[in-house]
Length: 143
Image 1: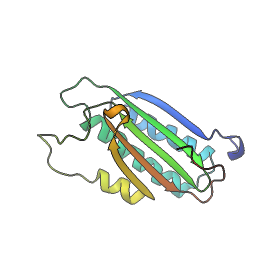
Image 2 (image 1 turned 180 degrees about the vertical axis):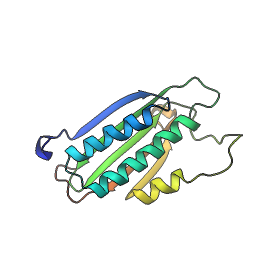
Image 3 (image 1 turned 90 degrees about the horizontal axis):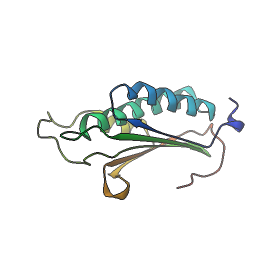
Image 4 (image 1 turned 90 degrees about the vertical axis):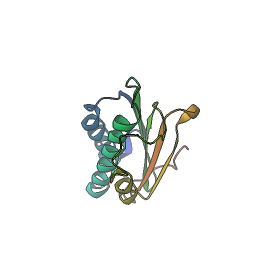
């Protein structure tokens, strides 16, 4: 796909199961590639999306039925904005957690900015990551 004909935004909702990690990674990489992102940007995005999606699956639905993980990717002039949102229990520590893992610090180090907040409507978690991608041309982000 030619970057000039690539959609500016992609979104998909997944059932929160381990199988979605590879699906999400592949879909976001395909979107980034179609948007004109470099291999380095695509690698950073896929690693961060894998971590954010895995965190949602492992932490968001403890003592709850698995819900949904929504991923949105948006290309704009010089950047990619990626959101990974779940409808789980939010930023509540797990009682059986061995401590802070490397996932959050990896997402922060791979992205230009990373913001973790309560999800839409006060439910779940919303991870917003922006990736510098000077090779991408387009309009500013819609948010």
